[in-house]
Amino acid sequence: MNFKEWIIDLFKDERKSVSIKPVIAFLGALCLCVTMTITSVTVKDFKPSDVLVNAVMIITAIGMGADSIDKFSVKKKEEPKTEE
Image (tube, rainbow, N blue to C red; front, top):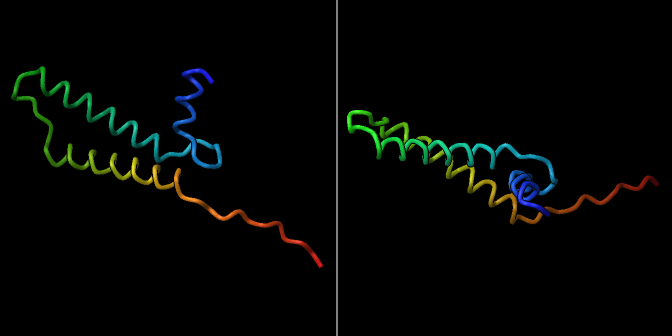
């Protein structure tokens, strides 16, 4: 497995299909990092709204938490129905 395949696997769920939760969590974390970096190096007059930063942080945390719960939860396998 190379690095590209490992990154793609991070965004997959237990059925090996791409899930939106880790994608949203990654984009939210990326936006928070970029916002905090820009805020720290620019003039202090340019400051994002605290409410907006907190909202993105909450959405990111929920996305990461929901994805983690899905990865570690055990789901029952459905048994094939037999016709009698």
